[in-house]
Length: 392
Image 1 (cartoon, rainbow, N blue to C red):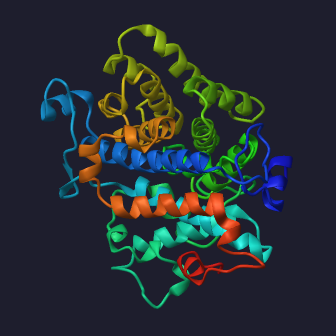
Image 2 (cartoon, helix red, strand yellow):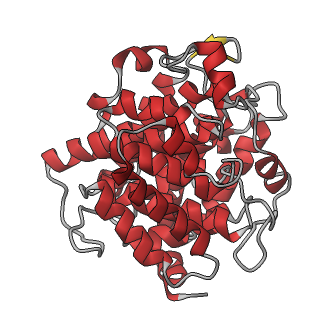
């Protein structure tokens, strides 16, 4: 086990704001808590909005998008899966990632502190939603999220996710699941790792990588997930997007197999200087078919860098022949973490499927990360909180 994994396993937990890359133990100020909650909401809702915007054009070429939606392409939410604002499995898995991280922090009171295991258990709960007709009210250990009926709709789940979570075996770096899977399935669910702002960036990278290998074992897939989490981490802590990308590049430098991901991020940075943003520039960022994780990450980073606002950035991110749902979700998470929830388009939020659940989960995450010791621990216990996020 490397140093980052050992530190993660033995208990780097977030108990207060951090300024130098180490975990601090001071109390959160009210303004800091409000800013953090806004960025958490922004990242998770932004991810879902981008996912929903891209869903209607998934699988279409750029010409096909223009034939269906006009020369400007898709500019507003359109019907997918029978309704406007429908999200895909990427958003479902992102929500279960959040659930797993909250429960990991709750479980540290028991001494069983291994976040990859808790996140994996959350993914298994998601996998059950893809096979069951609805929630099993008898299974109290599932917590509240697994009882949300709208999450039981199957929305184009990635094959590697279905097979990766088809049994209870935990994939690891040494023995990853689906070692040839290099698509976006793991990256698109990894924004929540970046919201652990009290963790050092290297630990965020390690956790995201370890959890990505549970379904996507190709280095470009799990390193893209790690890089994305580090970028979200920097934005949530108040860094510029360029600085956050540079930090990710620095952390990737020593990782085996990092060159395709590093090259993709460098392409995204270089493309900013190529003039007015266009679909041609965006498609040049994807040398293949645009469905590999590193290509989707490059598109999302570029669109976030050149975005005039969230609406403009997301429109750029979905109007191309690649994986529009993933690039939309990644770009939305970046812009949401950067600007906070108030920057998100209100009309799109109003139509977003599951918005109430996302808000509730976002606020629970912020509450656990800023005030966890007042909710559970040796001297205090909130039965309601432990019913929502059981330790088992």
